[in-house]
Length: 310
Image (cartoon, rainbow, N blue to C red; front, side, top):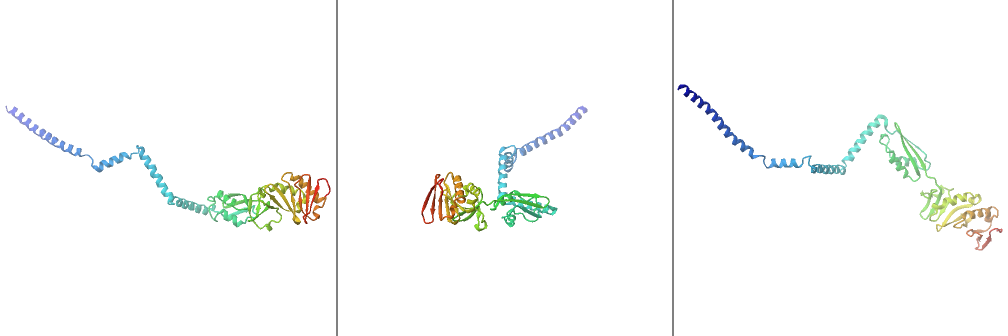
């Protein structure tokens, strides 16, 4: 009997702590459930939603990032920050190169006869001591081509400190008299600039609209006739169709629109063989193929048939 009671007592004693632990566990579980059921607050939920929206897996995030980058780059460029930073970096590099012996020490110019060296140096825009690597030779060439006498130019670096400039100047071909002044023109007819005609006494004089563009052929043809060329002082373009030769002593020779090369041969013959310019003549009309007309200074006209003596 004692053993049964003792066992029963021991069983009751062991059962009590187990029930107590069970009660404590059952009491703790609701507490945990209550704390877990609260979840994140309003701001927490907003933050989680924001993070989910701006996830890098979302294409909208990439689009917004690109837009922000473009806006930021535009602001930096518009404010001049990029240009100032680049200029500062170039200046620093130039200083380093110059101190290393690669600064521009001299500039050698060749080929200029009518272009002032000071104008060439100003067009180049190179500063003494500037880094030879930073010298923009292409921009310098473009500036040289803007000078009125320069037809072509070459700008080269010769390390460590030399810049060479080779200039090809335009060739003056004739003087073109206009109401605005006298232009020097090239053979192609392009104008070089306004100049004093006395500075180019040996150039032929052109008069009339369209004269520079069509003068090269007749000027070369007249140069092949020695007696005529010695007496020509100018070429007048008439209605942009034909030429009048202006000879010394105010004699005018009218050439036809077509076939004027043959009439130049006739004029050479009249000057050399007939001494036509020794007479009191003010005009020679060679526009007709079969005859020519002399106009005397008193206004009298004389018509001569080809083949007959003058």
